[in-house]
Structures are given as structure tokens and as C-alpha cells.
Length: 190
Image (cartoon, rainbow, N blue to C red; front, side, top):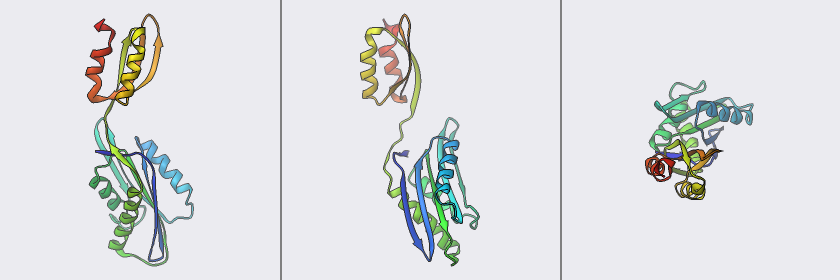
């Protein structure tokens, strides 16, 4: 699985209709809604905003699409197929259409929406998806520098810390590193 690490935009005109696409990283349906509302606000006179998204959740992958008033399966479905084909998760692609006065037909619409979405995805950078876990950890004061360096090496981070008799941390790190990390630094080992 892969994720988007930046936002991509693309625009093309097909038979007098103008298509503008945005590909953006989102981690929740709320973020998807906010991204699509912001995109639509930049194009208040557009006729259609078709979209598709795929999100990784605790219950599996959630994916949805909308044809935005275009014939069924001609706008959002080609965009969703691109996301599935590229094995992208936590990604949303929206495509705006300014109607040019000429009907494109169902095949033409599917190619136009899918093609513009492809251009937006091509304009982004992707990275491999790494599942991240949040862990509570209690460490000794003399371990703090070592923990910080180890988290940095594995692309983890400290989310919260409390200084008491020991240091109570909440850290995020790749799921594959959790067991080794906890065994290495937990105060229970000292």
C-alpha cells in the first residue's frame, strides 16, 4: 500500500469542458469533506465535483465515490479505479468540471474524469504506507536521550511526556518496531 506525501493538481480541456483535479492525502472522512469543500470553494461556478477516496481504518479499507450528477459510474468510479489500481490509501481525488456545452457521452466522461485524475496523481509523490502504533512507556531519566535518538531512527516521535519519579511517555512508532522498542527501553527491564 502507498500514501500520497504531497498534493497534486492537474487541468485539461476536453471538447470545451474544463476539468480540474486535486489529489490530496486524508486520514478521515472528516478530512475528505474539508478538502473537497475547500476545493469546491475555489471553483464556485463549476457544474460538477466528482470524487473518490480510500481510507485505512481499524475496520479495514473504506472507499467511496460520487458521480456528482453525471451518469452513473462515469465520474467517480474511474477515479476510484485509479486509487485501487495504484494501491493508494488515505487518499482523496476530486475532479471539477466546467461544462462546455458539448455532451461527451458516457465513455468520454469516464476518460475525461479518469484522465484528469491520473494527471493529478502523477503530479504527486507517493511513499510506502507504514502502520504506526501509539505506545505508553515508562523510562528512567537517564534513558531519555537514548529513547529520543531511537525514535528518530525509526521515524517515531514523542506525543506526550510527564515527568514524575520516572518519565511517562506516549510515543508513536512503526508497528513493526513496537515490541523491540518496549523491551529495550521499558523501565521494567531495569
